[in-house]
Length: 459
Ligand code: TYD
Ligand code: MG
Image (cartoon, rainbow, N blue to C red):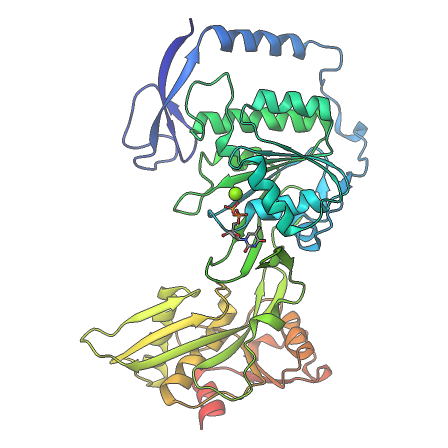
């Protein structure tokens, strides 16, 4: 009989300790230690012996001098989904482990089932969360299976790998890592040691066989992938699927990528028949109204490396109660307060007794500093109740002394605005180095201070 042993593991960094402690000695986080039960003795010892034996096999790896390693071109499966290829850095690398995190209901299962259905390769889709019928119903919604897509509803990691051995799929999808259990660990599914053990097991399998594995991971309320950070260290690629559930747009962001850039971004739209790729985000994110409305301004932003034009809406109204409200959706509230303070102090525009509401259209969140200028324009436009002409957009950061600062990749922003038929773009006057503003059809207006924007637009 295996002896039961309790240990405490830090949910932030994975440090373990035989005693509970309020503060983790390794990462300094408070209240992160969680109780875990591990089996000591029989099973672990047996397993260790097996590993020892396998490491003495003839084909076990030995040290190789770097110049002698052949670079061989990495094999990649090119997905039928261009947005996914983009975030993965050009396709699914063989033997890689990709973790997709996201809030419940955002569309993780839909994204990967759709991939499984559309890829012409043999695929093993393992679900510990839904029954075969549920998956079938979803699959019917998203399209005709063109592939050999096998569905397995199983949670034991050893059994899954046995099936994989027999089936020899070209891709394994696990929905989700938190439901898997390893027989070598006694704690409940989803606990730190289970998640870590199962992920380790799958990683070893992927590296040995060259079969890429996709893992779906739930995220906790702070937005981190539940389970220790360790999971993120272990996998090759971490993707974050995000969006507002009340809107249809979803963004797939690269958080970590051992095979490509982390600046990439995929955009999807959730429809009744699954996720649709959105190759041209600006065209749908701009609302289609022809009349000039006050309080609305267009920002030429950059998400990752993708230029996008998005609409900012502001509403400034007289406060009914004593303390005026400040509310913002998709834009950092502290940044909004800072911009209001700059407008008060540097331009003498007072918002003191007004409620201020700010919204980025389409449920998009952005922390691009270049949005500042459009936020300021939207705020003044709403306060003065004067609309900004339709075909005008903005890209600039606002500094504390009211100066307009330059932003990165300005040519890309100008080009995108130009391509979409905008007539004017306001940028910082310090941002014109290395670009020829005459080569575009769009008129590039350069300004140095917030007051100049006020004069140019509202006087
Ligand atoms: P799901 O993939 O189950 O989310 P996750 O695995 O991240 O928890 O997505 C669920 C949501 O997507 C659900 O609320 C319904 C919606 N949906 C559509 O709008 N259209 C579709 O074709 C599908 C399959 C789901
Ligand atoms: Mg799911």
